[in-house]
Length: 427
Figure 1 (tube, rainbow, N blue to C red):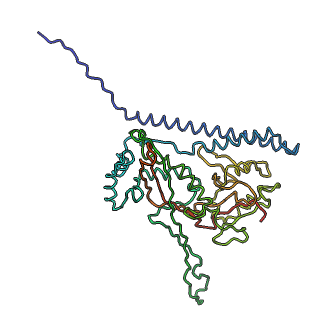
Figure 2 (figure 1 turned 120 degrees about the horizontal axis):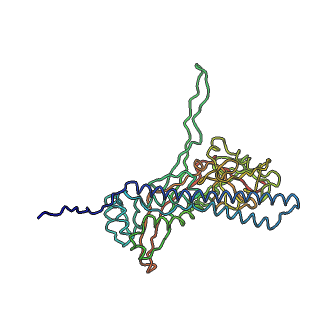
Figure 3 (figure 1 turned 90 degrees about the vertical axis):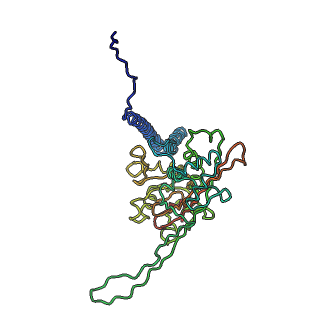
């Protein structure tokens, strides 16, 4: 008896498509690019509406010597909308680690066990291997490099002065920067002429101590038990706003006592009487305002108070209220001095120089130093001491778990030639 010739169907398998992930990733990127483009289009439409409304306001002032209140109110609304569109998207989005990356380091795995459940044994072993000491009594444990990098990346994205300043990492408590106050004797001489003996250069130093900055985010036990929560991103997201706010104020106006020294806290002097160790300024000639006639001239004076070598990378720094006033200025040909970014993700410009918005800059007022201009990469130094510490506290605020997070930051002016100020006063 013959066996019927039957074919058994092989179990159906799905071949892995190596391009599927790439296609999905490309679609995601395209969607994100579309969102950025749409946001940029909205911004440009708002700016065009702002220009039309401001032109209408100026025409009303010329005809009636006063602007229609409705026009002024409309201009303010558009101004606020521009501010919101400018600030929108500054906060970096929360993301996840790309697939295919290697697993967490030993330090990261031990740190995650400590944050989630309070297990200190793994961190103790890691720090013993690294010949470092860390315990609750000493103020917590060092976070892994991945977490510290995430915090630094977020701070650079939302802290305006840090984003434009020179940032140095140090392992000691103080960074000392030497500079030459008097150089060796130099000059021209003929081939057979006698030369005077050269003198040794005179060296001085600027000290930038790193001060402790802290934040104390809280978490619920349910959040810590959730394996889907990325601990690096969670801690970075929780501390970024607190750290950035405190840093922003200190880098602008900090007095240097247990905090960085801001560039507005240094002694200032009129540009004609400037000397090293002081920040030079240009006056508007009107107390608490720009001049009524040719107000843009004082901005040009401010730009050219800076030496040519610094202007190549210079920028304006001001808060949003001052920027709202500057936005309304025009040149002699009727062109706006302030221009929006030329492309999505770009920066607005004033007189062709980029603009950085720092909320801690003072408002326009009598003798206020409300506008800064300079090369902040050369002018201001931010010092980060390596290492961020976290101390887990499950007892002080039951049922919540507190995480006392500290980092050491310093800052100050390193080149007094590189930053100039606009003083809204007469002297």
